[in-house]
Length: 115
Figure (spheres, rainbow, N blue to C red):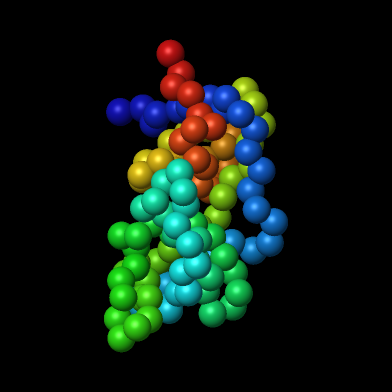
């Protein structure tokens, strides 16, 4: 089966700075939900790196939020008309790879089906 591709409808610029990356069992500080996609939380790791994290990727334990799996919240900057390969879809966000091999998350609203 050929990987699914999409085309970028609207440019998207990833937030500046190093993206949140945690390993299973690490603690997270969650600040707020994404208003457009409430299953996603803006979180910070112990090193001060922040990013969007899906609620299924962490749990509350003794008043702390603990990562249930390794998380890489890196986002991808893209230009209109660019084609990306879809790696994973999760509640309004899509993990994509661009032609240069860079991988990161995008809001599904910036993408269109190819067809």
